[in-house]
Length: 144
Image (cartoon, rainbow, N blue to C red; front, side, top):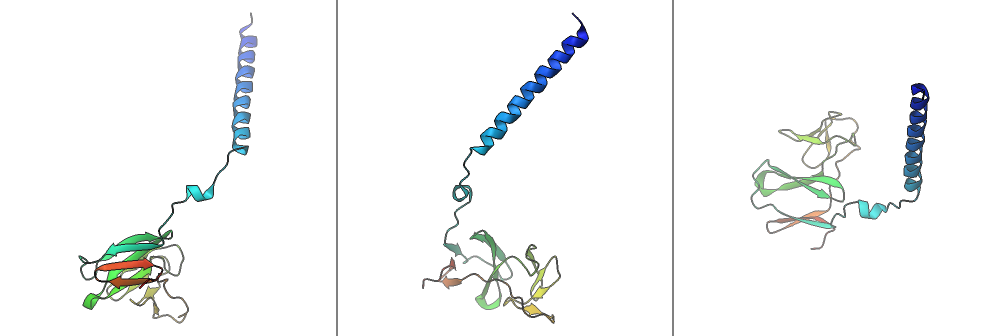
């Protein structure tokens, strides 16, 4: 038997086998059901955080409704809670001495969420609904 003929037959069989496997994978992918709700993490409507041990200038992070929330302890037992995204829409904020800075655009914000030193004063940081009861910070819908 000719070796060239044997190699041609083996290559054709391998090619047909691979095409068969590939078509089975494609056909199976058509009939799979993906439920988006089960693939996503269900985040709670209200988050409770113990803030009793926070020091001045300390930042704690939490997840709420798919967003990163930062809690910053200010002077005189005051707290600033904000969504950790600046005016660029993608980049996190960096804490400076007198406020926060968007890493991508360089925009600076004060500790109330308003832009500082900018002609375009239209953008403010997103602040989730929150309140403090004793030493617990509640983030989410306000139920006092």
